[in-house]
Length: 77
Image (cartoon, helix red, strand yellow):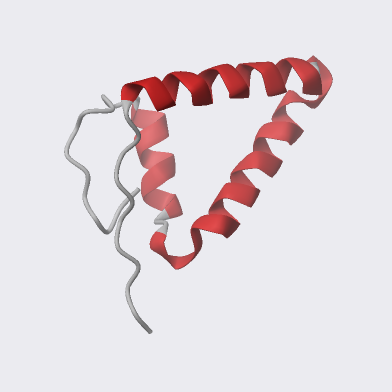
């Protein structure tokens, strides 16, 4: 099997659009369904990312609240 090359990081402007889209979608889902929506979103994104995604590393990054400019490990999130 061929290794999947890591994707390039999103430019800041694209991250702003992602944030706005996510905030709008969370509002549409409603407070009662926020956790379920976010779980489904992560599952869809992980499925689409395939084997190139190190989900455990992504969780660690999200829990550690790192800076977005930190150097990325190609084998990680």
